Structures are given as structure tokens and as C-alpha cells.
Length: 265
Image (cartoon, rainbow, N blue to C red):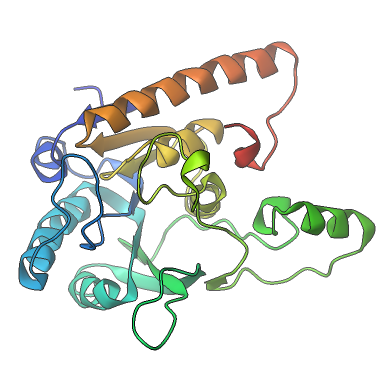
């Protein structure tokens, strides 16, 4: 069964059950948040008990698929991440709980201003590539920030567990299709560069419009994704085909693609 550079259209739990164990170097999951978002073919409104029971089923499959030494990142709202951490702490080594600074819709009296990104490894020995603020892609990508970086000598800063310089894709006109929670490419770039090496297999069971696969391909990793919505699968495959043409053109010109992957799409 081919598992590298493949997108599977179907339910993530049933499709993961068909995959062999210990094959994934780096897994990332950005599941539906149970907020009644419109994903087209998935009902995103369940009781808390049903949602958490469903979550533990697909989390158990990811645990099986991860190689010894593999890494796993799980993005969700803090209210759900607390429950995920209690479950995952039984089986994996928690390395960090990262706060992604990203304002959301006001709910309640305190403005929700971050997402939780849980970072786990399957063993105590794992891939970790130290990154710092000297990598341009870790900085703010706004034109004013770019200008400041070219005119000042910024001091190096450590790679922290608070990510303040990656911005949500909020506007529909910037989305490939109307996916309600499309992730920015430089978000996935940061994770992939930190926790994998060239040639590794990157897995995403909720691939959406393909951000994880796109970042993996541009960074010379292999990808495996599962997505239940055929429209999103089609969009992912179209973007990946464009990347193949893009990379071939750059290789012909003996150039390298820019680290800021948002320049591509």
C-alpha cells in the first residue's frame, strides 16, 4: 500500500485503521472544534462527552501510527486541549504546551486570544531542530515588519512557547476555498522544520485544503493526509500539482524557494 505523498478521502478513524503501525515521523492534527462550523460533510456540533470519546478514538490511532521517536502536535481550543492532555499524558512525553496568540470571536467576558498547541513525542529521544528569531519566517510578515528587519540589527531571541507572529487566515478572500479554519503556511512550516528532517513522513488526519501537505512538499518532506470532504481533497491535489511545477521551474533555474511559504500561494 502506498502511503507516501498520498491524500486519502474518507473518515480519519476508519482510514487510519487500515494503515500499518509505526510509520509516521511527525503527526499534526487540527480537528474540528465542536463549534458548529460548516465543514460541508461533517456535523461539528456534538455533546461534550461524544466529542471527547470521538477524539480519543482517533488519538489512539495516531499513537499507533507514530514511530518510536516520532513527534505529535495537536491544535485545539484550550477548553478541549485540557482534556486531550490528560489522555495523551498517559502514553506520550509532553514536551511543551504552546500558546498560539490569535484573537478569536468574543465569547464571554474575557476575550479568547490564543489556541493551545500540545507538543508530544513518543520517546525521550526525538528530532528537534533549534530555531530562533533570526529565521525570517519566524518574524512578523507585515510590510512594516519586513522593512524594520532590513534597517535594524535585531537581537537573536530564543524559540519560545508563545507564538505571537503567525496570523490566522481570517478573510475568506485569502482562503483557497471556504474552509472555516484554514491554517497559515508559515504555522505548519515552523512545526515541520522544528520536528522533522528532509525525507521524513508528515501525517495529518484532518488535512482540510492541504496546508500540511503543501508545507511538507515545499520543505522536501513526504506527506500523508486524510480528509473527509471531497472538495477539499480536490483543492489540495490542485495546489500540490502547482507546487510540483513550481519546484521543477526553480530547479531548472538552479534557485531555491523562499523560506516564507506564503509567497507561493
